[in-house]
Image (cartoon, rainbow, N blue to C red):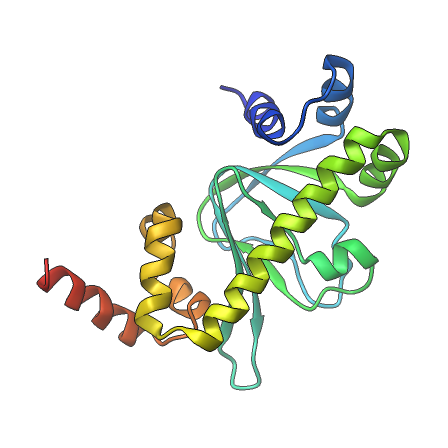
Length: 195
């Protein structure tokens, strides 16, 4: 399946659009190849697009005062990523978004998204649903950070997103789960020994 067909399939899972509406939506996306470690977004610059990951792995992260990366969001095939605060409000980004492996994305420009939303209810519904899902996921993630142990957070990730554990480097996954790579390695080791 080519990248546009993959995005079309993704959209059809979430929304019913007429063939003309779907074609209009798909026409707004621009393909981009991103090399491993290449930045899509960096602090201080406005995130002018959101990216649908056709193939690859990316992460959005902050760098804390001690110089440690703190992963906020992950994205692999069939997921979306950007610095949402920067993208939605068109203000300078606070996060980096970088490729963890060579990646192929389809990018939608903020101005094009606004035009689509103004053009029809179906488009507005699609983007609203994306935003709702992202907000609900981030809330679950914050609550898990307060209420679950590190091992429970890892188990939850394995149960709901097993592909992440296979695709994302240990140091990035540990940062995402708010633990050290050494502790995550210990959890993984214990799970293998207890099988």
